[in-house]
Amino acid sequence: MGSSIDTKEKILDAAECLFAEHGFNNTSLRTITSKAGVNLAAVNYHFGDKKTLVRAVLDRYLEAFMPAVQQSLLSLKDKSEVLMEEVFESLREPLQNLDTVRPNGMSKFMLLIGRGYSDVQGHLRWFITTRYQEALSQFTDFVLKANPKLEPARLFWRLHFTLGACIFTMASSQALLEIAKSEYNPNTDVKAIVDELIPYLAAGVAE
Image (cartoon, rainbow, N blue to C red; front, side):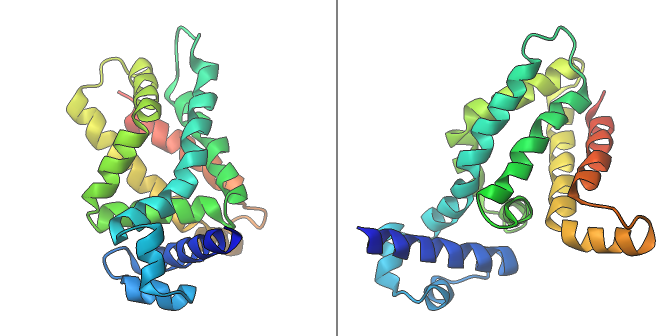
């Protein structure tokens, strides 16, 4: 039993590293098995196919992130008026806590989500929206509560522009920190990045 679990984790760790670096489309199962030190039969046994493996890699983060977002949003439930900054602030702690799920988890998660869109992984979007429909709907409801006049089509575009900004910023956080520290502020950290990002996103979505 323990050996089987270890093998599964080896495959997930190798796949996560390669997917983040090269994307989903450009990473073959053969490359993953080589990095993990296992054979193709092990991948087939634990995951069945590449699509299932892609979902499993993301789900290690989503299983922690989505429930945490729902819990965080509860603080806004009884407010008669909700501000857009408060809605995005509810994502701060769940995102930062991903570093406890995996080393550098927040940046890896955002990079993997970005890969899912740039590689046109439609099955991944279906998986996330189906499995975590309640959490996503709850977040959208609070966005609309903060912006009751926002039309559905405009909401779609603004949330996806928001996602793009988050993905680039958080996935590139280490590089951005190095640039900022050398040119502007020697005390810049990830918290400072998020402090700048939240009001920017809130202003971009607000109607």
